Length: 148
Image 1 (tube, rainbow, N blue to C red):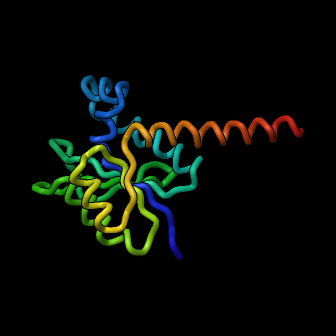
Image 2: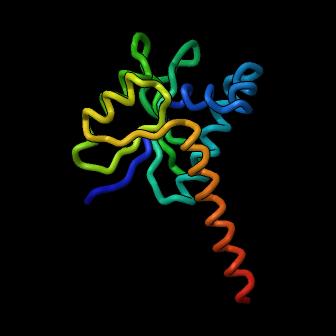
């Protein structure tokens, strides 16, 4: 069974978004949490499984975490590993068997993703798609409310 996945180069996406980037300068943890929250909503609205890969930095955690009940999967690299390496490994492992889109503005990651059979989207396009999907959900809910 082919599933659709969105693999997000998290810090690359955070720094491409003015509000998240400004929040990251003040509070990196809050910026990471806000991105995950936005991606959880997108997963619910678009029906795509979201996987987020953060750089470890001084906040490095072991392997993976699952965010709240929405189940966005979050990866942090181990010490000495990079988010780019995790993204490349995931793309190589899953692009042949699943519909996989990598969200990043990093040209090296985009090239590796396409070479492995994944598609790519830029951070700005991702945020546009997130807004569109959420708007569609709101419109559907409004239609359902009017039918009552």
